[in-house]
Amino acid sequence: MNMNRFFGLLALFVLLPLFRSQSQTAPRIDFFSPQDTVKNVRQVAVRFSDQMVPFGSPKVTTEIFDVDCPEKGAARWADERNWIYDFDRDLPAGVRCEFRVKTGLKTLAGREITGQQHFSFSTGGPAIRQSNAGEGAESIDEEQIFILQLDAEASEESVLANVSFSVDGLVERVGVRIISGRQREEILKARYSRGIPPKVPFLLLQARQRFPAAAKVSLVWGKGVRSKSGVTTESEQILPFKSRPDFSVTFSCPRENPQSGCVPILPMSLSFTAPVARVRALQAVLKSSSGRSWKAETGERDDKEEFVQRIIFKGPFPEKMSFAVEMPKDIADDAGRRLINADRFPLTVRTEEYPPLAKFPARFGILESKADPALPVTLRNLEANVDAKMTQAGKPENDALKGQSYRISSEKIGEMIAWLRRVAEAKREYSVFGSKPPQTREFKIPKLQGAKAFEVVGIPLKEPGFYVVEIASEMLGAALIGKDSLMYVPTSALVTNLAVHFSGAAIHPWSG
Image (cartoon, rainbow, N blue to C red; front, side, top):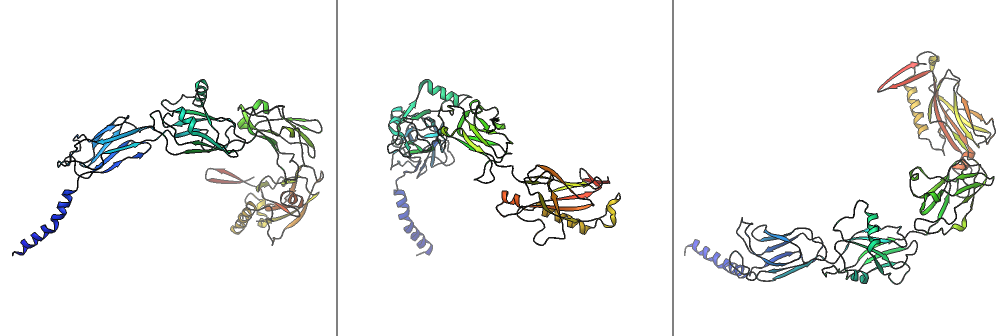
């Protein structure tokens, strides 16, 4: 037998059962989407196992399904096996659609479609798209009205039966009531001052009882909420919140430590846990034991606000004195709640003495050498004689600085820059001179008006040069760092008759 003919018959013998099995497989629908419950549907996609329309002719119209759906759409072929149904819009909740294969539907080869003939899906019952108060809010009112934006109108009967609030501390869930009529319209107009969004399903809900203060609250949108078309929700939707705390007021002032009184040079303040009418809040008064009064003020941001949550009393105040903070009677917040700690007022507070102070104008300065140069330092409540150290860097050679020009080596310039960096990075707990200080000159700064006086003292720097000056004070250390600590206050100054004028990128020196 001819070998080519033999192998041809063999191949036919092997492949014939495969062709027979494929021809015996009935055409069907391999894929249909969506099915069951799906939100935001815009399109239905169907894939057939066999070719339905001629290749390259997707515009061929073939009646495929009997469509039972309240929403309009249009059918098209994506290719010879894939059929698409596009809806005119994203489907809202509460829509149920059914697709039944046309009786006797056949493939392009004339074979009838078998298998599953009925497909359906639903966009589910109404769900919450957005809430006001916002989901997760931690300061809702005890009688909060929630503005809910839904994806479909809900049956009021089903809302009352399936929506509730879960509140910490309460065993039973709290039922809801629906806000309607004139009250509903007024709330929506107040919320949407630029106009209520059209065609948006709103539902206004309120709990049937007040929430406890500072309690965790959950809005439970339960199973069974039904749309106008009769489609119900199949799972719970839970939105967490927290009710605001009781209405109270807190006094505060800067202190050197928690056990001390107020720093007399800084403001005292009252903070409310809820908004208070500005006019009412400003009726609070601070009175000293000597009979002087201070009126309350608001911060700059609150000057034009109708409601505020903080007021201040601006200092400075007399040191070591008692004060009484008086609140207006029957003060209430924006919800009409009274203070729960009103019995604490008038509240007695006191000031300490003015805190120690040693302050240079800056970390670096320039002094005119021919005008009796003195480095100013502001002192208050310090030792009668303040210990200080000084070192001089870059001292002019051969009295060159006395002339109209000043010559300094690059080595000395580097030393000055190094000291400038050390002063700029200095920490108050450590001396700028380090554990191995250079050759320094020790001197005393006398407090001419007494240790507690507030005064500006000049430290004379007679010779031209670059100086680093440091003040060390135990009183500053005790007040600002801790007991038995020294606090260091450094600065630097250049004493010279050379002035520098900056103009763009150019530097023009001249002798002064």
